[in-house]
Length: 109
Image 1: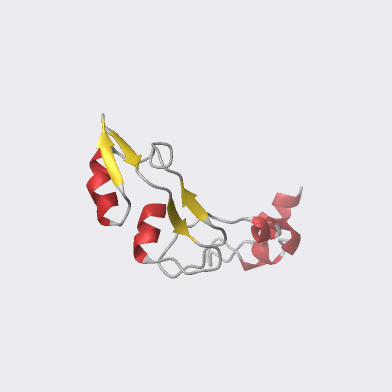
Image 2: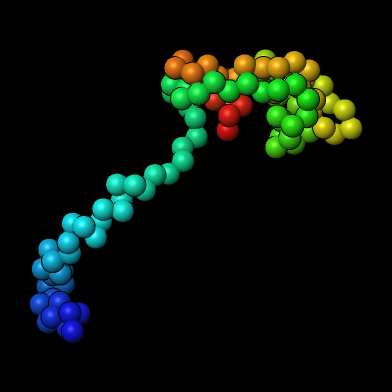
C-alpha cells in the first residue's frame, strides 16, 4: 500500500511533508505543459489574426442595447433599432501582426 509508506514518513509534530512530495514523479505534472488559460486581450498585445466585424446585427449580438452609445464612442458606426445594435459598416477590429489599441481591446472583451 503506497499511501501507508508515505504516511509513516510524515512527522505529525513537525508537519514535514517534504519526503512525501519528493517522491512525486515529474511525469505526474506533464499535463501542466499543455494547460493554458484564455486571456482577455489587452492594449499592446499583438493580434494573432485579422478580425473583421461584418455589418449587421450578428457581430454585436453579445452586447446589450445599453452599450450602443459606448460602442459608438469607441469608433464603431452603429445604430439602435428595436433594442438591437446594428453595425452600419464593416469594421476592421484587428490586423494580424499589429498591436491592439485600448479601444480595440475594450471591444474584444
